[in-house]
Length: 124
Image (cartoon, rainbow, N blue to C red; front, side, top):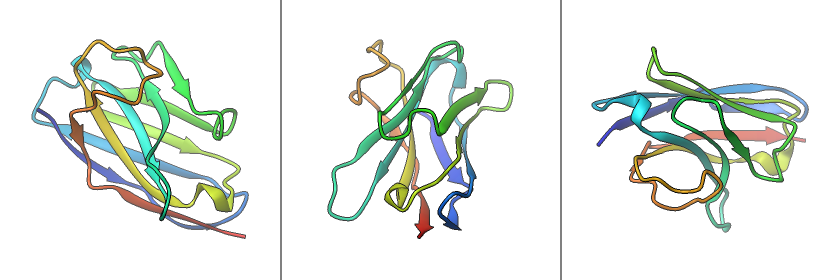
């Protein structure tokens, strides 16, 4: 089990950038695949991006491909989500999550540990 704490959310204008961070503790970070999810009011939770244990492989949802970048620093037990060219439709509560299971990187399932979320609001 790993504890996750997100930070970096905020209120920005369309076109701006934000960098989310997720600090992990209580486990061996490099053993976990990491994902960033988001959930807007009235919508289902969506897998935004995922990264393999080494960081060599990444996945992006179609809605963020080319604008968001996921990365990780295993020495710092932290995963990041760089968000550029933000749009109002990116407004959501963003969560990071960890999983130890061997699952396709593109799958949104089998995430065991979750952070509390950080709010991102993009105004038009």
